Image (tube, rainbow, N blue to C red; front, side, top):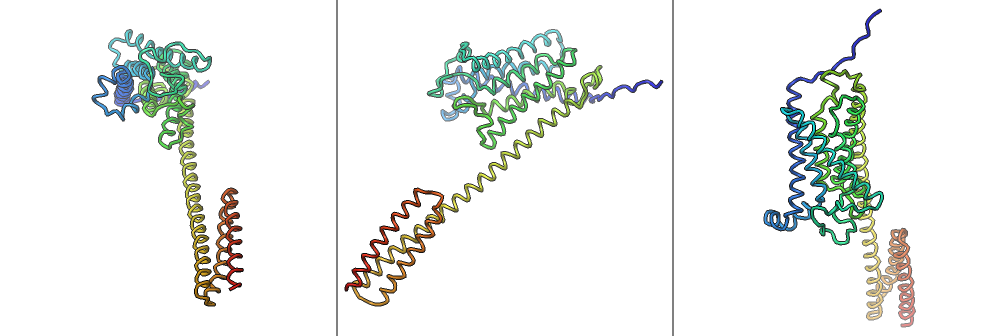
Amino acid sequence: MAQDAKPALIVLPSGALFLFKRLTRIFSCLVFVIGLITVAAWLFHAQLFGAVFPPDRLPFILSIKCNTGLGFVFLGAALWFCGSEKKHPAQDGKARPLLACAAVFLGAATILEYLLGWNLGLDQLLTPDATVPGNTLPGRMGIGTAIDFCLVGLALAFPELKIPRVAQLSSLFAFLGLFVALMALIGHLYQAKSFYVYSPFNYMALQTSLAFIFSALGFLTAYPQTVFGKNTGLSLEDRGGIGSFAWTAISVILVFLLASAWISAENFFGLLRNNRMVVHSQEVLDSLEKVRASVNDLTTAAHDYCQIGRQADWVKFSNSRQSFQNCLGDALRLTSDNPIQEGRLQTMGRMVDRQALALESFLKSR
């Protein structure tokens, strides 16, 4: 009996692994710096950032809540241990899951606050938030931000356990976190607020979406086997196959592209609708100008005929009345979609008709 063929392994070259580790370090530094600047801005913005940044820039910096910045500090530090050379594997292995779980705790506690109506005192634990007047939940991160902290934090917590299902879940959490952040980024780029605004004071800031994208990409570069297959020890079949994660990645990319295409189409058709509205408004204004001009011609012809009595002025008066009726008909047709405007034009038409009849009776009596 022929022996069963062994499942193929995809082994990444050492140069690619080195590059991935460096990318992980870069992503971890970006996330950590975003979080650190946010926390420092909240704690010391009056003393430190007020002298560095102009006052009109502070709202942009403070659009990330203090707890969100603290969570990014945890995620950035956890990513740093993922990209380390593991000179102290025991210490790195303990610090990374603790830091990731701290970010998960912030996200999960916030979700519970939203779902159960609780106030655990975490929102303004480090500093009070008075940046947005009328906000009933000052200092609280958005629900999308909290969900992403749970997803990315869980991805970073236990990716190296020798349990295939746990490794698969870590990859899935990273892709889902990347998806949520990409949707928010698309919303900011295309001004589609429904993608990142969940309520008047509940949204995901642009810097927050970028930090989550860096965090998810940092996980994928730290553990490239989640995308390209296991390169040390386990086969692709043991890890559930490259297909499952490849299809997950492809699905995320397809949804991202479809969402971009849908938003682009909505914006395109929105521009067309706005253009049609502008053209229609201009047509209405032109028709009203013609109505006004015909009324002026009518009164001018009546005045000239009354003063001079020429037959040409009488013909001009009669033609002006007919021109007024034609112009008014065009204006009524263009305003048929607006009953208020249409009603006002009809009232004006009846008034002009009465005045024209009175002028005609007066002129004939002379």
